Amino acid sequence: MHDLSGPDEALELVFEGMDFQAFLLTVRLATVTTAILLPVALLLSAWLARSRSWAAHAVEAGVGLPLVLPPTVLGFYLLVLMGPATAPGRLLVRLVGHPLAFTFWGLVIGSIVYSLPFAVQPVLAGFRGIDTALIESADLLGASRLRLLTRVLLPGARASVLAAAVLCFAHTVGEFGVVLMLGGSIPRVTRTLSIALYDQVMNGNYAASNRMALALVAISLAALLVVYSVARPGARGETGGA
Image (tube, rainbow, N blue to C red):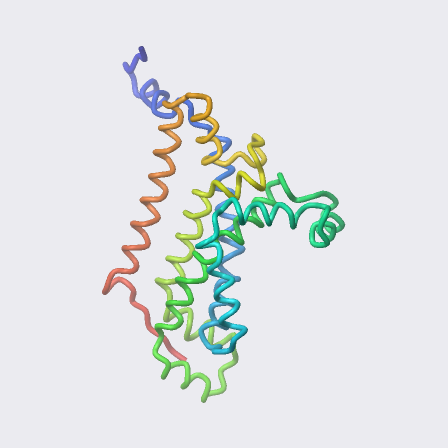
């Protein structure tokens, strides 16, 4: 029986069993993944929004593939590609000096691939929703691709870019299958909050599991609140200018 006579005791009960190392690692992984993915999503979406080639359709289909693939399948192939038995894996070993599987940066690569559609699709939808007259006017004025991106596309899709960043962060926080395949459960290295939750359930520690699950629910709910608040009519304030 816990003594809840003071606020310190109550706080200790709330966080009892929480794996803070796993929590901090999860936040770090999600932050690094989002920071890398967002610029990639902006450049890729700007190209996809203007291109009508078969190559663009193929790239867009490839970007969306993680949405329909089981995470364990994606994690398995990434694990194979990072291993020394393949040419890409051997190249990575030469570059970094060791295999990337079961390391933090291996998780980053897996998270980038797995969360790519959550970063690209909102931005792409935002770019495609911009009035084509603005883009054509910028082209007639001789705007470079960089100027078109920074002065027309980005101001016209601010809410979509913010939604992409939030969704990418939240999706990375909740990863399980890809993380398990690529990193296992190495404390302080690859054990994220979702993996720690799985470990606690396997050990029959349901009280700690519940606290970790609630933390993941809270992060997911906060992310959805942000996305819906910026996406509602009248909240966007999206305008474009050449």
